[in-house]
Image (cartoon, rainbow, N blue to C red; front, side, top):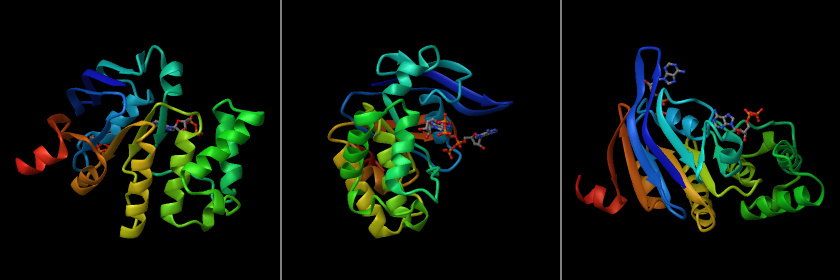
Length: 222
Ligand code: ADP
Ligand code: ADP
């Protein structure tokens, strides 16, 4: 589903990502773990085709994210770290708007908006203004948004940042249930997040991959 080969990214003279390679198979839930400044967001943005690598190649679902970006993006649902929501829109209205941007209309759009609200536990609050929602519910809206075009792969950037423990549990449970139908790559700086959610973890630090293993093996080798 994801194949990253010898990818580097420089910002001027600074090397943010230094010759990394990793892959993710269909159905896997993989954590991308590292401290602040490790190169996680840079990698996520290259995976979604928004930032070109300085060197190397990236394939998503068999499509090169640079030369075949439209086909690659169709397979990717991306939730950025700060979900860019419109506070004065109702949830349902916002998801319809986002679906239209992805090319949906008519009955398809209605069905998809209904389905993602159901999947993300939003149906009962669909008429609420986004600005009145808790952070936990906003993350659910962000997840619903990322699912609207039925992507195979979900790329989630720090999905539980800034949430309280109760909201964290709910968002993790939701991600786990979504992972039954989607391949997931989840970036985080929190080890317990990958232990709770992921089958495998790729550790990045100072732009380099330091480990690639199951959470259990990594913890027992600490
Ligand atoms: P993380 O998401 O793991 O916190 P980033 O990918 O955001 O890490 O950053 C990796 C490194 O690249 C950091 O040293 C950061 O300061 C630098 N960096 C990130 N974005 C830019 C940018 N637009 N211009 C210059 N340096 C950047
Ligand atoms: P807008 O941000 O106005 O919705 P974009 O063309 O920037 O329009 O974004 C289209 C899709 O890509 C949206 O789903 C958005 O969340 C996602 N996206 C926006 N910025 C980035 C980014 N830096 N990396 C990956 N995906 C992004």
